Length: 520
Image 1 (cartoon, rainbow, N blue to C red):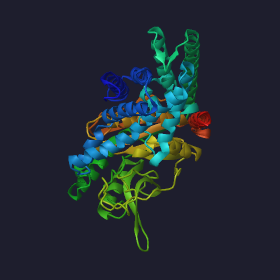
Image 2: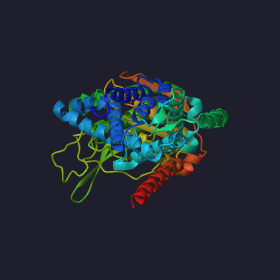
Image 3: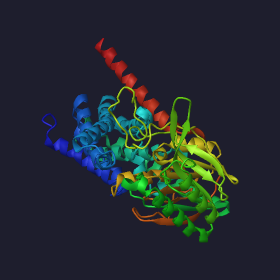
Image 4: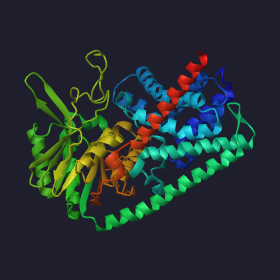
């Protein structure tokens, strides 16, 4: 703080708070388009190391205010004392903050001329977001583009470039606003004056990009709506049991929990759904192994007269060990088990302990079973004339998982989750915002069943339909259009983000080479 001055720290923190406010719960999405400007103003005359430090500070404040709910989860359900929760929370926030620190550091190193900086900002930003999506198992939680999940016209480009395309536009906007402010106030960007002609050209380019994005969005919504109008429909019911997390795994409440889901499912019977969906681990026991509760579920399914997709833990005995899975069972209306999906992308410290054999003192939030094993990536479940792509909880965040399932014939995407871990915080709203992009990227209906909410439906254009409130029992029934088109994004994935990362690496390598050559 002493090296930057309080005013620079204040600017960095202002950016952090503006960024956080652009995401749920605050959900003031337009703030994202200029949220980075105060931070960028603050770094324009700092050394590389100080730019990193100021960016790191901004990142810490942003991720602390965005992900504050993690302390609640660790303390309430991980049963960890507060003096342990805070260091864990700090380490995760510090890791994520490094990306913003690196962004600020590189921006000054490779883009000291204003016009070059503005073009490099979105490239570097997207490249780093893509890196964060898979580094150390990946933390793709609330990218810059996710803030626009309610902006139907803009998010349509996700079927070409994913959420990264929106992140690109938002970062570009921040760069242009920055240069406009510096130009109007006659301030410099790293000893360079902002050229008014260059600024005018940048504004024109951005205006063209935004116009093309909105025009594409309008045309694409019309096209998708025509497909929805003629597409076959699957009537689906989602059941939100609202089971308190502290009671969920208590053996004394297993039967009560199961009965609640059975009774709520029978309420949906009058609307004659084709498929009834229960959330992640809605059956808090080993299905088929616990005979009494399994039979109770089977009787409920037969009485409802619909097919069911139900979350449950499962296990497979081996000669010298037992493998545990976080699973979803597809069960026919006559009680026959049709298929099973096992979660493939597991939550570190939630479903397994990384390097657990070397770190035996670390535990998991899910204490009822040993470490889960991953299932088969991309597996889909055949259902009637369709294929279901199931995403269990955390898997919703990873676009490649949904893409692979759609490539493997999934024509409906289903997310089952248990967000009770997060309590009444911003986390369930943030989690739900990401779901919109999985639907638009692949032009699939996405159906979400959450134990305590938010449950609901998202159509292939990204419209949110019949979302349920948090912490209420709910039964929602909707007809979901079944579209089988494969989008550019489905076929080619994160090609755009990969190009941004590659270009970022090339620019950095060239810059390092030039500095090394100048020293010689």
